[in-house]
Amino acid sequence: MSQTTRDHIKAYLLLGLPLIGSHVAQFAIQLVDTIMLGWYSIEALAAQVLAGTVFFVVFIFGSGFAFAVMPKVAQAEGAGDERGARRVTRMGIWASLMFGVVAMPVFLFAESLLLALGQEASLAKMGADYLAVAGWGLFPALIVMVLKSFLSALERTQAVLWITIVAVFANALVNYALIFGNWGAPEMGIVGAAWASFAVQTVSLILIVGYTQYATPEHEVFVRFWRPDWDALKDVFRLGWPIGVTTLAEVGLFAASSVMMGWLGTIPLAAHGIALQIASLTFMVHLGLSNAATVRAGRAHGRGDYDALRQGGFVVMGMSAVVALLAVILFLSIPELLLGTFLDPRDPDTSAVLAIGVGLMAAAALFQVVDAAQVMALGILRGVQDTKGPMIIAAIAYWVVGVPASYVLGFSLGLGGVGVWLGLALGLAVAAVLLIWRFVRWQP
Image (cartoon, rainbow, N blue to C red; front, side, top):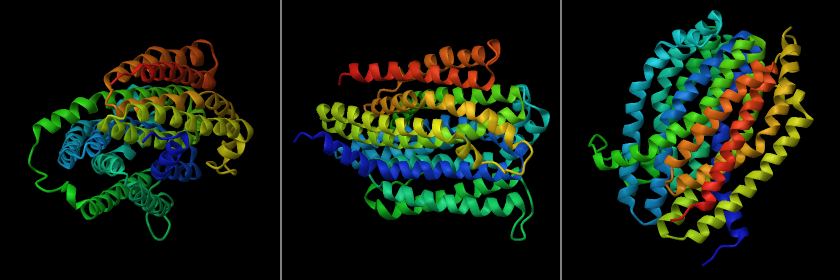
């Protein structure tokens, strides 16, 4: 039976809203860190921008295996293959743990890395102190991502949402205690935020493992978990590493912008960190819809319903475009109000941060639509397990176009932080055009 546009919208909302909520809640953990550290000190905020960027780049690269689990499980469920869903989920966890072991030295030797990237010595030291603690949270964070992908592919998104909401409140409470030294706890500043993040990631892992074991006993995800399944591991790796590289290329673009803003100084870096948090918050809506697109495209692919796959893809792109236009209106109409949420009005540097941040918010408004378009096309292509082509597109758009454009506009042409952000917009626009073109031309 064919589906109408209304049917697609309803299905995307039922699946996508909890995913959007879980992404927003997950992002709120980092957002709370930024707000509380901004209240603590501008220097601590700037250091956390650098350290958080390093952690997120590594984490998102390793999440490629988790993202690979989602379309594989969705396709298996669409074809009625529970055993296949179980196999790829187990090996997704294996691949993620292997990646974590390889990646840990980045966090343990972070100070040298940040200094090599041209950051101020005091910021590099504070950032390294943060990562020495928060880095260990990579292991639980990656496993949580795999199980979230598994549950999302089964359309059990409500549980994913509630577990993440619990994590948000736990993070806020521990942050409040450890950053500022409240309730008899030691005042630890940025290191307190790191301990809070690690604790919350661990609690999230316990909760999601418990729910998976309770709610999906028929899949037996953890039965004989220690037994290797080399074929499934190879399958997850084959699909996952291009996803990881693709995501790394995009996140790396924003990480490079953070490094460039660090060259401009502590205040521009703090303004950049706040504006990026706001832009990233709206992006979580698009990411949730993109995940829903991956699941629905994967299930349609599994049952061979390619008309529904294409029609659903165009519908969800339209839904995302509406959200992007609303974000543009907000960014251009009330930038000071949005930026001021992150700052203590009594801090003498607040006015300088706001002055820079308003320009960055205008630049962020420019790339809202193209950023939404590229992530939606990417989600649909992942659903049909097309990952290598998008990887090449991402590498070209972000690193051949975006990063050089940011440097030229920001430094060679003297536009400063706004120029760096205009380069981001250009890279995202190129990616959006090429990825949509690839989806339109896709054939089963």
